[in-house]
Image 1: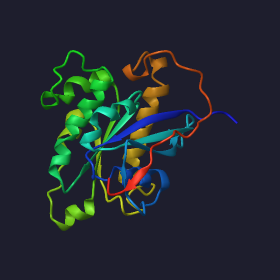
Image 2: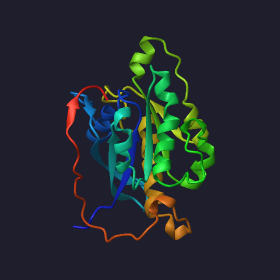
Image 3: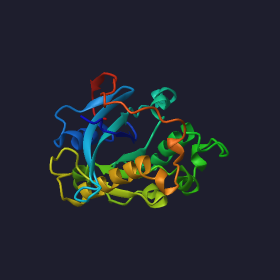
Length: 237
């Protein structure tokens, strides 16, 4: 049996926005029954059909690295940022601050990747447009808790960072199993994002593109082995 290639996608955002619920929904195709507080990092894995329905269709593993959002772990979590092939930024639709903080999350990752060496280290001055073009890391934005936003009549706006980065954004309720049902608009957008991640990771070199995050010597590929992840404590994250 041939080894299945994989890509690594970081899932980041403030604590409590629903990252674990999102990654579980994507991987298991059903809502999580017991949301938990992620300590360090938790990894979910899903199979994705690249360019499904075409002659180039191929199966890939997509690793979803759910990074704990606690500020107390900020200095330690950077060990999970390298390498990175795609980024999912998650915010809570009922918490405007969590949306504003996506800029800091993106800056934190790019800074670790060495893509901001000439940039002032202050996250407050970070300009996504200045770096996304050179970073070549696909970005996807997810607004969660759509059901609660409707109940409190929160104004549902597209996040600023999504428009600045030219990224797609979906607004969903991760506690509904049909939120990412096959064929739905959110599901199609997510699938296109995964296609883009895989395209840049495995199919761009032949077109003369060498993404920054793929630099270095490529090691021989081995069959997929599920990564070791840290334990989780029950809470909403």
